[in-house]
Image (cartoon, rainbow, N blue to C red; front, top):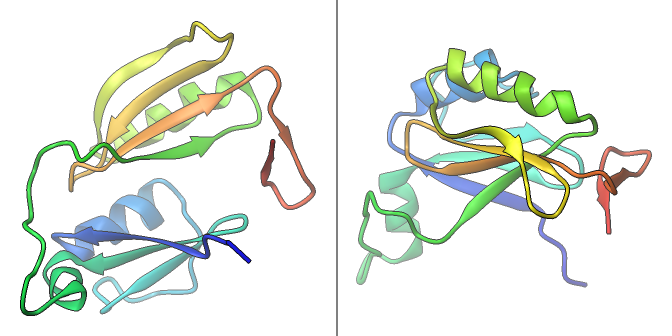
Length: 143
């Protein structure tokens, strides 16, 4: 079976990242510590994980570690919302949490409504609503 069970972000400052995601954006976790070795957030269907970037690089390969760059790697995360106005609400949460708003909320050519923000490690998030989005009983977007 092909399932994505966890998305892991290597973060430069665990404490600031936890404060951003847990305390300011409201992502749910059982973790109470402000600076654990790893933290998992509960999201519908997939866990969202923060892990120290240096340790992630080492975990991938001690002999030939990937190079850490600050450029765009062609990877974004999606924050799918059920109501159009939720895009604005999430962007305001992100803005107040210290995220860099890359693209303000706006209509999209395909009929949706979206915006982009970057967290403190430069990971890009698209906050998006679509007129045809249907969510199941677990909050998962159905295709």
